[in-house]
Image (cartoon, rainbow, N blue to C red):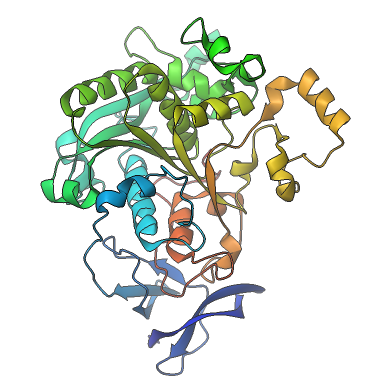
Length: 461
């Protein structure tokens, strides 16, 4: 039986509802049914890709393939012009006053960049039997349109590849070719070219987007979880930052994927530097922003790329990272240098996503309140000092400003597991629904909950 409509009619209240076979509490905007409804199974949310976070709407429930499917028909409104406030939304003030409650303009911008990250998944050839495995399926000229992002006003200018630095044993020669794929398409650079969109944004925006883990060697790189020193850019690095802050270190596998090259393929670092240098030469005299986004492994590479760009280019524009479900990347010195560079990082975290809590340990005093989440700041100082002195390659630090969400706040999610909690579409759904820490989910939230074309048995990392 088709379910009837539900209309949002009231402000946020606290309520509880059974989801699936278990009962969970969540808070959302009050719903009043237009007509009585039969009890539904777990709802799955579909979104119009042009949704821009309106506060009101109508949820229409349909039965599709034996399960209930909620389709929200949005009340359309023009996209807000950011104008002179664009730097605030890019984090120049560290998003103070914009995260709790979540500002509507910021929500739209986060979701927009999340769609750029999603396009990096949709365009990747995951099929090991395909002759084009680990490459981009679409040409640059139609990339965004065929990835589900028509009329963005952006144009892809460069494809990016990442190479693993793992030295394989000889017996790998007998394995299928896809197992030993060292270099693969990892993302793209896109530049806003539409005059109307540039006017709305208040500047010309350059996007770098990275996908998450896909190939065997990328999975192996993820397991190289100890910290490695970043190569110094100049001989005076230590003098510039002081002896206590000298020695930025990042996760070994991430650094390998960013800096490794082959005889036939330059490193990801070289490709990013070359393209950003070219764009700065073309547009450096205009108001310009550089937004780097990615999910999971892509979030880690986005942070590394931001650090590298601000280090390599003396006159780099405002660089902002919008990361989704990213693991830890570096140590405290790395974080301090990011902050001194002026790099802005908005780290979007699902509390139920284990990938955001690894690798390593965190000793920062500012994280005492989250000691149960693999943070060990509550340990006696002498124990912490021993660990820091004896195992510095395992002591990480969180970077940037955090927007913390939770799968448990959504009435549309049940059966929590590693893959579901880590999936990018789950993140976009939670962002679309989050209101504030006192009202974490709104009833008008709509976002397709489902997996990417690739069949996943493990969470992306």
